[in-house]
Length: 284
Ligand SMILES: NC(=O)CCC(=O)C(=O)O
Image (cartoon, rainbow, N blue to C red):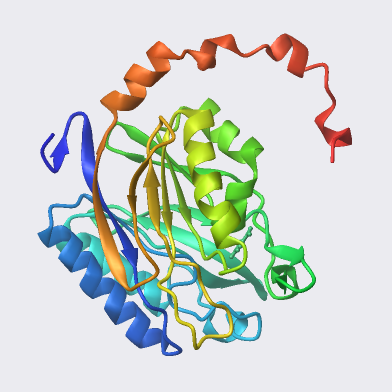
């Protein structure tokens, strides 16, 4: 496969360091998108909250109106000048006085072709480990969102969204070939769950999965796990970053997905007749 062919394309996962300065973060992202282009990539994926330290106290301060804010202008321009698709990780979005954790997607003409507001907010309470209540600062989105990259369909989620197999299954049902999760797991929940969740979403849906994290900054209030990752429909890790500031360049060949779907045809084996008798609303 060349960097872009009928069977796939090359993707960049940009594991950049998020500083306290928004303009610096945007400039770093733009530079890394250019580098991805030089390395033959068709798609660049940025991390969750790549313009903003992951901190409830800062989300509203850093928030922007989409698509009028400085981040959207820069991503649109970067997508257009490099003739690439850009998945803009996420930024805090200000809309009707609410703040959302929102991913924007830009096509090679610089058009905004999709927007996903994080549906499942990161509210956990693990004494002695991680206590975070994202819903104190953010509002949840209420829709699932996809976009088309050539003949391939992509489903979008943000970080904690990846814990919900129901959401990924709905994307599978819609025919998604690839799921993308900008994310920022912490150093407590990253080691036990990050890789497992990514591989499982890939395996159970027979899709590729890209998860893009910020690099680890041990001086920040919220220390990201890093380990950006690409998993294939077999559940194998194709590429994994360590915790440092770095990028992954990965060739995605979707003939693998077609082969696996044919060889292990779980798409046709589901017993909806049984599942449909179970009332999901009553299952916690
Ligand atoms: N930013 C997030 O949504 C973090 C999610 C997370 O760490 C988890 O364990 O879930």
